Image (tube, rainbow, N blue to C red; front, side, top):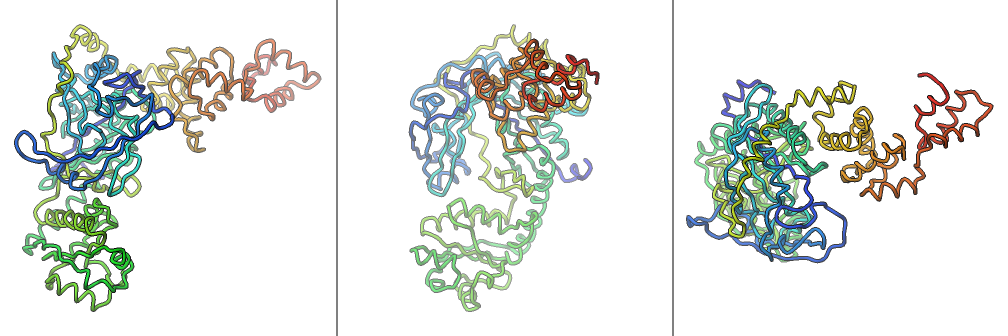
Length: 613
């Protein structure tokens, strides 16, 4: 990593968008359960969406791009977690007041101002993840800030909004969504572009995540919090990087995006110097119908076509590496793939390796009018898909001549790079929600929230006192399980030094064994520790319980009975000792714990046997 002076010279700008699901009893605008419960699918709802002009008479480029794919959207619906509101067949119900209270409490802790009246808005959604083609959202805070390592980072806006549907599958013809997730209350926190380095982006995301866990009732587990990063450099473009789950990779991926933009600027300068141009598609099917290149032959034999286009002045630049194992040709190919084809072939590649003969290459070059400093691309597939893919590819090639495109890109945490998702939507995406009345803010209640702002130093001190292990206490402070820890300790009275090792160490061990412990609801986790507090199960028994992923309080009690985990304690333990009479204390301890390790607490047995540590 470079120092901050380096990033300042680059004109580096960076801001975060943090999205965190709230832990409420209902969804934001209906009474459906926000739990992603397993249940049989009720059916599908199918929709198509098309781009239309906004109030200024213009069609947003990103919306037009998405609409040109002509894909169908299929929404899977369920009985207890999806209703007519979710599929846009019924007006929204009143706003969830529990979610609003949590959002206002978070706003107070981010030192934000709150409007006197909250207005629900509709935000255009272009990827089909909402059947209505918009997401309901309301501004609950503005002009706030958070301190990161002594530096104040502005938070211009805090929103309470609906979660989107979860994607099930996607291809060129349709996208399938699971609607159970749609409408879960979500808090979005946006920072100003004041983050001065990739490492500081990670630290800011950690600080906001910590505050959310300390303040609000937030959901836990994979997918319940998402961090998006907006990045740009001077002469480059704002790019939104979506999908960070592991904050440890955030600095490297941001660094990779900086390198990508720097290299695209080098390519742009070279293309302008060469007076580059993008040609028009030419049908090359007749030239390549007998080719030995399997990719093209299979397509033509199935009734498809082959299109090619000259890229004047692009020679050597399609193969220019912009990130590790990624080139300008890769970027153009990613645009083309959105039409459902497998990718492109370009002249900076080893065409003989594909199986092209020299005669075929010469014929293609002649048909396209390729000259010494030019390149060309080829796309094959069904006529409609091939035509659309070439349109997308040439659009990207054209933009390479004069700009780094504004894009929404995905974080590839495996290869530590970003990948194209879609063009970045324009700014005019909001319009009023006419089905919901404005909401007056309870100023007295918000004032109480402002008085109760959380002190991280105080929380750290309390954790150290409860857990009695400095390393575990610090780990718990930054853990996504902190709110669950506080709930367990507060409601059950089980000491922190018992709860923390189970949440931080035992759950980690079970995850490594492939057990989905993150799917265990808070209610069930709470019930596990209540049973421990009631002497119904031992600490070792807790681990065995968690292996079986209990789903409810009743499920915990059932598992204790079925797995034979009932704790042997008090008079029952004294009676058990009589079975081992005649043995030494050490032998009794060893044999009883070997046979009853899930049912007997070792410390209680040692005390009964008067064995000192």
